[in-house]
Picture 1: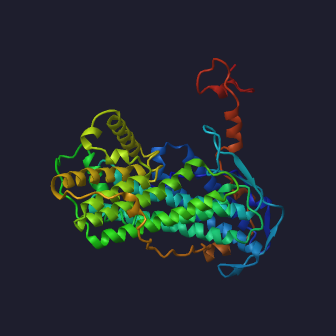
Picture 2: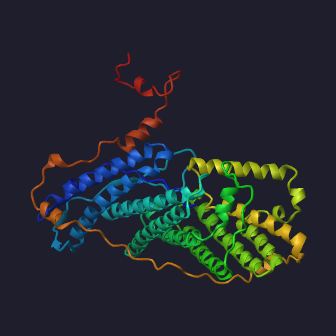
Picture 3: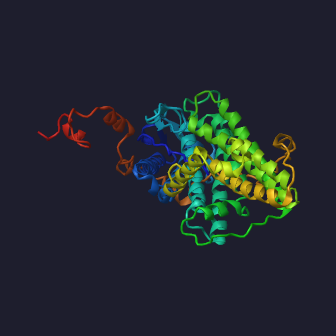
Length: 478
């Protein structure tokens, strides 16, 4: 369900060229080494296969958490505040220049996003912290992906995965909220859309919406029933109808509506961004809003069906399909007619394609779970329509008047503030010693500019794929 963020990469820099300290002369040197590790880790993460990237997120997170305290120490030295109880005297030798590759800006399809030149320690701090928040969201994505695999997890594993994902979302929200509050001190927006105030605010609202929506996932049995239904290894030809208490169904609907409200705020903030945001991300935010409202309609339908109002429940499911953006005709037409023709074949093909996405894990969740929610709605719709046609025989009212009576959302989380990490006292003491210039580590991976220049050079006519470097000038091929 979470958006598959692409982690940015950055250029190589040495803080020794830009800062000097009379009280802690080794601080720029140590910060350069920590940043070199982050740069190498991000580049290696980018080059590994997508299936192996989730298992390497802990390495990226560890490198970022080791580097961020040095950034705040440099920031404290420039602003004149204390760090770990010590005053750091830091002098700006020349303006910091750094390059980061934007991952949320709109680009030509098939081309890699451009590298953006930034000039300030503030931009470096913002890009690093936003990358940290991306890692948290990707970790939550990896946890939730285990719930949609063919192998169903146990209830304990399901609860643990949802709790871990919720924690990651709240950690990401704390980072984004901190950046939004800090960006209010700016006099002008940065050139990178990734760290602009509207986009950071949209990301803060989105992560809170995601953390709110998964609160209902632990006690929602219908998605698991759909996964079990399409599990090829399952030997259960019949499953017991799941029960949800009436009060909790109404509560779940209000939580979903709260998530939809946060997603709507995120969508409004993205529309105010000066630079054009990646349309894939904008579509994800809109799909998330639709998914949350569709879930709310489905839970209100469950609440009505439990009260014996099967007709109202079916009408709520029709409204859920409208909120999801699906054609209402596919749900309201006769099931015997729906099983025939091209529409049935098209739906089966779409479901198989979604199953392959879940198995591979790459593009899974780019629609914010909208397709999965549509499966749940269709499953309940077939069941309730059959019950109503044979037993209840209730009139199905129009769905639009019911949608107008939806209740207000209810907040679940109380977001916690981001705690600024600080260097340990022994690390601060060690940086009082004079630096050794040979100890500075800027990274050993290739720079992004070299990669872009090599990719822009066309291969010679008739060259074997992958042998372009052997035809370069100065090579010993001939």
